[in-house]
Image 1 (tube, one colour):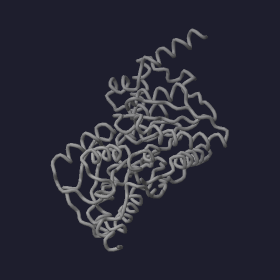
Image 2 (image 1 turned 180 degrees about the vertical axis):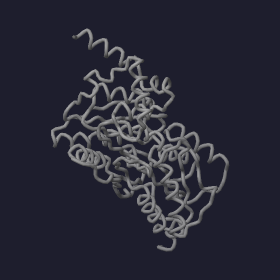
Image 3 (image 1 turned 90 degrees about the horizontal axis):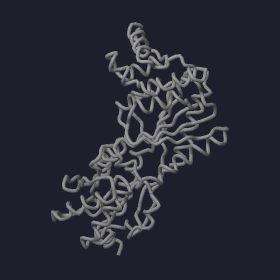
Image 4 (image 1 turned 135 degrees about the vertical axis):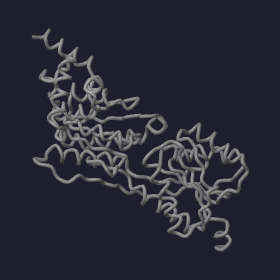
Length: 359
């Protein structure tokens, strides 16, 4: 019996949903839906997928495929390109994990963490099939809407954090990017800054896009000037953002009096480039970041930043997941947005014009 089981597992491990999809002429997500007995697939396609899987030795009815590891939640950390999910941002990822683990422990759940260096649906799916947890929390920072569709084929409850996609049929917990950016521009405006620039990321990310869009909406709302020359695109890693900002500064264009950077890592790289150029912070230019990483306290000068409780996001994600696990029937999906606050530090000051008026 043991030998038969091992043979089944070897066949299972050597055949992936991509193999099945390629041979059957369907998508990997279709195969996921069929293998997890999900609705939405025609009977003819379902039979084709099952027959194809069987012909490739995929262990559909091996018994272990549907085995469930009770009271375990799995956290999927997926670095699709690694420009955001990397060691520079390890602190806030740890906070997410800490929140999930603390809330889960209170309900008798243990936490597993799986790291993926790329987005490979086959690898993720096979891991979930071989040892299914009670539920899954996905860190979707680097994922897009098309990536999310794959998870329709997962049979256990799934909650996403650090994202909220309009077409997604999943629960999600994200920070209130729009409210945060409006709060930042409001503070700049109250401190007399009307010429406000944006340092955005050259790397695609939903959160970065939302912050960029909200930035221009907030400028218009508060009646501040919009100048294309005050938008600077840099990489989202520290070293490269410093180099990219240096290149922008070497062009010699007039600078705004204030800069909003879409994340702290970018802001810290920019602070270094600005200081090296001989521009005084905050006397000549004020800077605000986003995330309130511990390194923001140690920068020169300490960086003003917007903070959102990552631990709180993790806790809320588990609460949503637990609700799905306990539900006897479907109920409406929830998209939760967590607010935060601006931490004022020495990289921010009143504009020279307002200082003169106050004097």
